[in-house]
Length: 326
Image 1 (cartoon, rainbow, N blue to C red):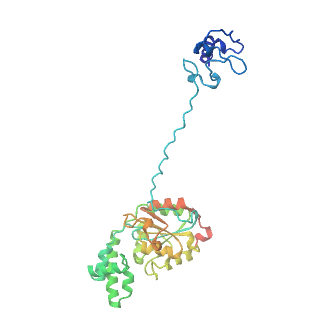
Image 2: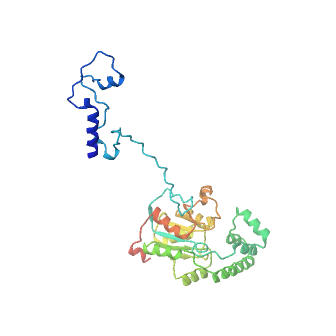
């Protein structure tokens, strides 16, 4: 501020007329120069004009006053920054939230093969053997719109054909059990649900022996755990409705998680539950292009992302102590 005062004094010395009580000089009869006229100009009230007109120094910080005298403060428009792109989401672009957001969730029902366990069964090879070759397999796929419901096909056969078919399926399933692996993130997700007292059940089209081995090998138990011995099986909603009835929880407070659109997602949608498709390999089309009758509420590419879906979109309401004893 001392520099501001010094500049004012120098300016006043150069321009005596800028002092508040200075008298206007006596006009002369010769024609004044422009510079001289400006020096002796008066305002409307007859008072001498100050030259140059300047802003009060107290309105300007000292570092903005230049050596040549004060200059008007130039306010630059604030630079508009480009909006930051949204953070990358671990879920796919099809993970749009359903209309029923932040509703209570009290139970999660999982598929087993390809969801809780790493898929190891060669289903196309199984279907070819059971159906009788590549041509029969291709015809079954065409009839099913690109998918084969092998159990549904077998139901229409005679007793002897059914026996041979089930023996072939059992052989493929036994080979798969020898290579059974837990899906990455399954143990952590189950631990999260247990900590929140969220129920967890299981529905599979595999046999009961495979479910028992899964429970024993990985030390996690799902109650109820329904295998294909429970009829009717997926995609019929009966097994999921049975689990909801056992829990005494409405389907609207349950989510079905699985890797099959035609079995898991259709089962969940028919029961009135939320649905989440696990698509690890990207074999399915984008969410927006899926038909409404198989379109899940959520699509993820890993089980840890299921945990994120639950935390973000639901009010995780634990079951009561009385209910937990069911």
